[in-house]
Length: 593
Image 1 (cartoon, rainbow, N blue to C red):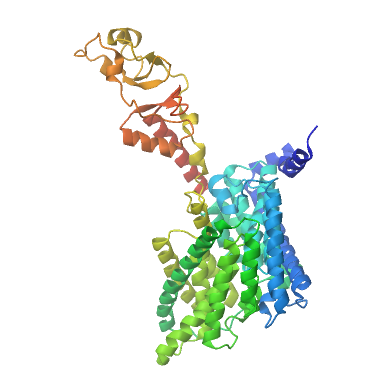
Image 2 (cartoon, helix red, strand yellow):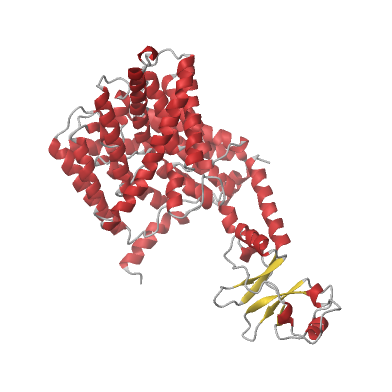
């Protein structure tokens, strides 16, 4: 009989075992148009996810902060000081305790869409994704300065992955469907179908192909339509005031991009530094401390609370003194860093948009004060800064450019945004090398830089490539005896073992048959690569690197460097051939051959 904890664990794993009938799976796998239908369905579900999560957060704000219905927490001009401090503190404490308790049932870290597509072929946990979404809703609901987009894309992509596995989709199709979920979620969240589609292409699939165009594009469009139909108030970042763009603005936009890259890198490094400094505190207590600091900031301005949906509508139009805008920028940046660094769940997408808008206005006003003849329009630079900072933190240059285009409808302004985005993305890439998501992977020891599928490299291990029927010979065997047992042409290399049957080295058969070689000496005197061998868990990339370093044509495969038991042999030629075959398969999938 299962214990209560084991029964709970089996219940949590149950949904992943569902499969649709075989006949329906066969139809879906046989027709490309079936993926289009699935993409549309996933887009609709993503739109519902966005609307449901937005309504849930709005409900928490009304319940906890007494925000009037129809208004947003971050749009309030003032808030009850008692609630501003106690709600984030108590909410953070409850969050920390809940996460600690949940860790008993789900001790492993949940996989997000980018990591899933990069390493796991699009496989995500539905229950784990729901868990992340609920944590994000609660974090934002109690006022933590985090974005909801992380929960939107996590749950929508998790649902897509679950459906894809239920249909037993191929690896490439499953990755596309995960991208459909993220595209539908972002399109619904920002009211930007093109931005959502390119979010899926650039950040979640990490490539564009003919096979992915229709399903991802349709998912984004349907996600936008469904979210807009269910909860129109949950959408968009507001159409900001736009004025005439000049050639001078296009030139100055590059300076905005440079400044945004510096700010974006500082924010990302700040989150990592905060996490490091918080190590002295128990994990369950850190969110409460973060909530205390964020709540204290909210006494100065409630606009730093939650994701900043409400504040982004006001960022380019409120007429505050430059000093107050600078203070709000600083407090929002610190609040976002502290919220994520102390363990709250969420993202930086919405926060980076608000910070970018504030920073763009600061840039325009500051430059105009030094050079009054420029008379820069702060409204224009708020939008330019919004795209430039968000691309530094999130990535996806075209995603941010299309969001600006769909938000403003101004092509010339979008051109200025594109210039700033290109500069910001390039500077961030050259000097830092990561987006916020891949920076977190780097801190965990992962080497991935995007959602490009590198999981196949890790799956192509030495164990899968090696020959298990390896021929061995005792190291004390004489050369004369060896020549009899292994005549020329019988093998190229033979693995030698010592008295304990452990790996000793490799004999080159041709070398052992050299006429000048003394036939009475043991073959241990002519062994190669005594201290170099492969492990079965090594990837093909690691194996090829070791072949090159050892200048070896073949290497033995041993169980471990401690036991040194021989279990196989792998040649460099075979490893390179398998690697080349897999690369060709990936190329064909990319161009939809």
